[in-house]
Image (cartoon, rainbow over all chains, first blue to last red; front, side):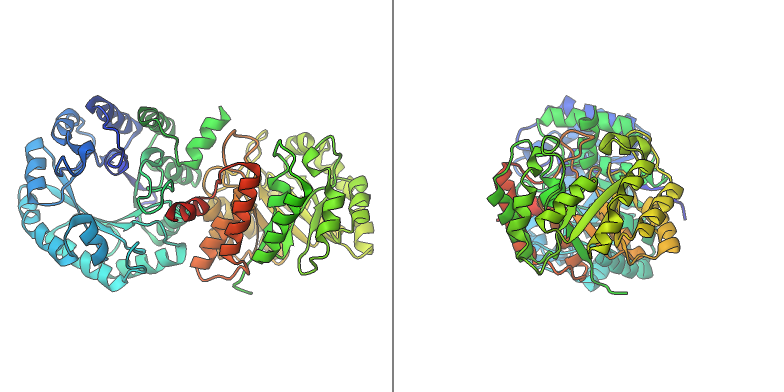
Length: 298
Length: 298
């Protein structure tokens, strides 16, 4: 097992999608290029959804056309259904990402489908995607708790993972959507997942809503996980608590791993530049304590 | 070994001492009383230093007189020297706290004394304090790194701890003054300390400057530490990085431990009230991600 970790940068999609002001295409492209330059090799750039639903992602076709020449990086396109998948194909995406949850209530609110219905939707295009040589990433939300249903079920998580792996999904990202997971829960869930599927195809996706993301990432690492989703500058708030942190900041994750002597492949200085660029572009301050400390030391 | 932890609340002293506007005595007293009501049984209320040096602490005598009737709590008075100790005695303090560091440069800047000189100063009053029935807490700063000298020496830490324990110090708090410690370093340092002195008389004092405080606290707990310093609402910025977090927020620490099923003796709702009260009194926002998430969910 390698000591190094792989970071999956989700800022351009998961971070920006809730920004109310629409960013110009060239800003998004430059942000992604700064992230590639910083060393990220998997970056979720956009989603293929109805433009009226998420206006920020309306330029996904043009965005893909602009970034595909960066062949050193993988750009999984988030697709909710067959229509989105078809559009992602037309734009040239070679990786797609699909998403479901362990909570029916959450999944219905998020995708207008029960867990079973979302798994059925996937059957409509995931086998096609794979036979066309695409690679598929799967997100499972509410793994550590649900804003509507409360505690989550590990049995349901294992069942959903089983289905996704059977569909041919290449990597599953386990999401702490509400940011309420704690280290002992992390240990317990990862241990169950490891026993059933190993950890080679598992990534963790923590939100820093209650400040526990780094503790959870450290715990996951010690349990054997080597892939983590994060967002430059901590882009993306928590939709369930106004003004609270959402995605854990790539800046904080990179800093902790590097201090621990663990390689992430990321140049921290260049990541700082990318984070600063996008913060200035959206006119916001960062949720990353490391980013803010670094700025404050100048 | 107990599973429960003891939290030492340092907000009233360490958190407020750098506030430029002088708070009225009654606000400080009310804050401390709210903390007692929330369940804190060790609260550092003030320091006995020259009023012209730290004007916020000029009312320490009157403050002590106002809080001593709360006999359920221990109030260690921070004293830099014999003069401060004498004044703390006059005010009725039954616990004192003394402080030194593992970095000479830091200690000179902080106390105008080398490490050796500070240890000599302690000999002038700590034995007296103990023979008068007082209990003495010792702080060691820069354990995980120094803003001036860089990395810290574990050998120097062990030497300083040895001296403090020989002086009769009852508990030593190991401070990550700059907030740069990481979980592997925590493991290494605690392991060395444990081997030499055990952990019964060791507390950890983390700053959340780079967002790693909870990861470090979790790691310390797993290594066997059961006492942690923290500050309500995360009061007290980092003097080495403008606008960055300083002391880890009691709110975040309590939340993580309670989620993990570990008792702290603190009522989280009442702590939230205390945090909110002091934030409103100083007109600042919180560095505590949990506090902010809780406010945002309302």
